Structure formats: C-alpha cells, structure tokens
Image 1: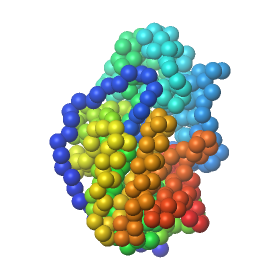
Image 2: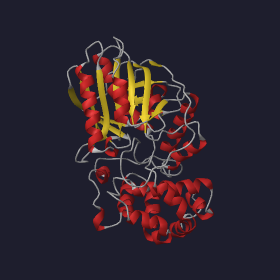
Image 3: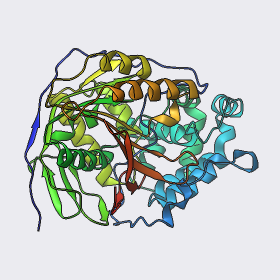
Image 4: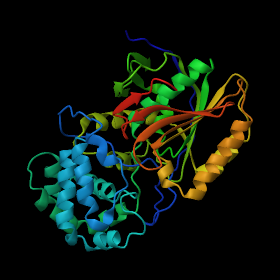
Length: 403
C-alpha cells in the first residue's frame, strides 16, 4: 500500500550569472555532475540489470583501443543504441575533424575519466538540436540511418564548434539521483524527528536542490508533490525506506561553473548533454528546468572545499538537521580537495549533537569504481552506512536490509 508524506521547502531567489565560464581541456577540479541522461527517441522499456551495468564497473584502459568504441558498448548496454551508433561513427570519421582529433590525442590524463566521448556526443546533440548540419538533424529526428554520412559532414563542417565543447566537462544534473538522496533523508528523519537544511556540492544548475518539489515512488511508499511534473520512480529492489515527512527548510549549493535554468543558453547546454534516445530522462530534465526557472535554486559560484568550510562555521539552530549532499562529484576533485572536504566535515561532525545532527549523503563510485553506493554518515555518532547500491543515473536502487 502506498503512503504519502508531507513536503515543505523554503525558497531562495538571487540573481544568477548569465554566461558560462569555460575552462581549458586539462583535467582538474570540476564541481559538476558527470555524464549524461537523455531525450528524444526510443520507446522501448529498457531493463537495466547488474550484468548490463558491468560496463560501468572499471576505469577504462584507453591504451589498447578507442574510448569512443568502449563508450559505445557502454551506451548500448545502458539501452541507448542510437548514441552507441553515433559514437561508433565518430570513431570511424574522427579524422575529418583535425582540430578535435588533435585535442583528444594530446589530452592530459585519463580520457575516460574526463568523459571525452560524452563531451563529443553533447556537441553533436547540440548541433542536431539547432538543425544544422541538416543531415545530422535528420538523423537525430529519425528520418534516415546514415550515421557515417551525417557524422562525417558534421565533423568536417563543425570541427571548431566541437572542439569548444570538448573544453567543457559534461553537466547534466541527473534528476533521478534525487530519489536516492530523498530515501536517505527519510531514513535520517526517522532517526531525528526534525526538518533538514541541505548543502549540496557540485550543484550544476541546482536542479536537485529543488528535490522537495518533485514526486517520488520509492518501493512501496510515495513522497513529495503528487502534482509535480517531475516524477522519480526508480526500479526498487529490497525493502522500502521508512515513511517519514520530507521537510527541507533551506537548500543551497556550490559549483565552479553554475548554470542558470532561466538562461536559454544554459538550458540548451544541459539538454544537449542528454542522450537522444531516452525520452523519459529528457522529459524529466525539461520539467525540472521549468521548475527551476520558476523557483530558482541558490547555487553559489566557487570552490566547494572553501565554500563548505564557510557554511559549516555557523551551527544550525537546535531542532534542525544539516545534510551535506553530493552526487557523482568526488571523481572530479583532486586528492587534496577531497581531503580538505573530508577534514572540514569531520570537524563539523565533532561539534554535532542530537539537537543539531549533521549528515553526509553521497551518491558516488566506490574507490575501485566497482559500483555506485548511496552512503550516509551521521553525527554525533560518526557512523557510516551503505544505504543502497545504485544505478549510476538512478534508474534502479537496491536498498540494503541493514544500515
């Protein structure tokens, strides 16, 4: 039997910057969410099993072959045959884009970790959405299946455009991951009967700061706004989370390059990083962007470690919890910045109490990239629990029976 929990949220409205700041194509700190989600084509209800998601379990070894072909296999396993075919054609036609090819050939660091293939895919999707080159737009509209012809023309004509896109890490703000964060907040609410404020790291456009404005079906329970256009309903494995109110009294985030949902250029950037044959993700992202335009999330531009230290200096009022959240964020940080964040949170945790609890909720790869886990550390105890094993984009969650 489904149950409903109440929702509360306070709103923050502040002016936002109107331009995207670009960064060079060398790896480094990226307060952004990682690879893409999806829009506009296939109707098939793709099933995602553990076996199908084995592509995501190891860091790619790019020394023995093309990262485009490797990522194509992964996309196909994820139920995106269209994107897989695009990347395979890119691999065959890359020489037609000499600027981009040289940029990739000279890449410093791991191209897989930098999501080179997803950057390239985002550039092509952006071109198709603009309607030029025409053959590429028709390919994305499903009017023909000449992948090599359309991709070759696009690479020849738009090499400089593609190279500019390669300078940006993917930003997708995958809204489905909010389901995992909400499940963790419900678990914490069952422990402490109080509302929470959120501090989010790597917020991008801040779509998940609006998580209280969405609807969720998490196993046998439902929570959130039943009238919301954003509906997060992951395949659920294991017991349901505890039913509890979802009450967020404030939500604020930080990103090195925050995007603004009210800016058409920024919206288009997020939509272009979506996968072009997964309609549900596209619709969910589009709906979340509309909500964010009407209810602007508070995202500060800055370095996450410094920002977090500043915001943890002042304790929250008694009777209010504080939750630090991050989803697919740590992989973009240097070891030094990860240590700074860990140490900052540990110091704040040492000052926490049952009247002012502190949570750290992370939706991240394990250190060996073996799987994605939803982890929660709670203070004053400092106890860390693995709440769930997750699909990287939140398509399914396997809730753990003991925490």
